Image (cartoon, rainbow, N blue to C red; front, top):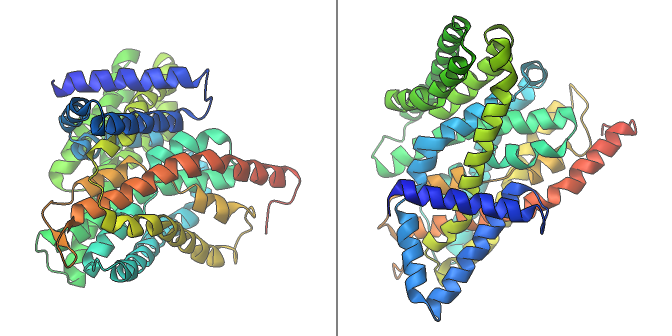
Length: 429
């Protein structure tokens, strides 16, 4: 079966689950799709081990026709981040610029280090010793919150504006920063890049700063072209060139396409929307990108649920998987709580801010795609029966599922309490 046919069938499955969810489970759509796909995966595994082994093999072969990492990192990520950037309110973002900047830069680094140190100790106890560079690699891929998961779940719950803009802004930008940190550590671990401060900072600066500059130039060029056009349909089609050709060109240049899409999306959504689009295209801009965003999100979350079929489970690694979830939550809490010690010296915040930012820091397809990009064949442990890629993929998959299903389904009461506290006139702590 071709990749195109596979994606068509998967898209139909995702939409069917979403349709059924309206009448049965009635939970947030992306959670329902992930949960439904997970149940399908478990059913196929059971049938594959009992009465119908061909079904499991056929399902795995079909999924393997879609390279998940390439599909996300080199494909739909640009669309999803650009759509997220379009919905960002720039004046509100400016009011939280220092908080978001610190959470993006310092928060990701703190979480990476906390998770790496904890994993190194846990691996030693579990008799699966991990070199610290691999622990850092896992910390880098699991620390950034996934904007796709966050925007799909948290944004729709109507959190107080101060919290909402922090969650949205941080998730969009730390996604790009986290990807840059991961690629930097990846180059040191597997490509022989010198692990000196100068070389690492050069690589990081090229990716991150280059991506922001490229995104600004791309947004400016798109603004000029859209402003010069009077055809509403053509104006909307021009926006499609940003996450397609623009995203591809950023990756060719070696700069962060993720950060470029966020910056370009913010420029188009907050500048071109009001001064460059015709009345007709301005009316349909949000509808067009909302529909595209919903469709790609449905497909992505279905793939996350079905990815269970591609994960190789090793009993030796279960202790790391079980302790990995609280470890990542602890890293997230520390990375949020420490900056808030400084934030509160200058501003008051909703007393539920840290809890919502911690529990609402969802992980998703981006972490899974980065885990899948780790090369196979690196053996761990005294008997060499566990591969580095399988171990990290197991841990990542468990954390992603817990994040989307458990955290995503239980974040609503926290947000409702935050809204009630603000309405009651006691928004600060």
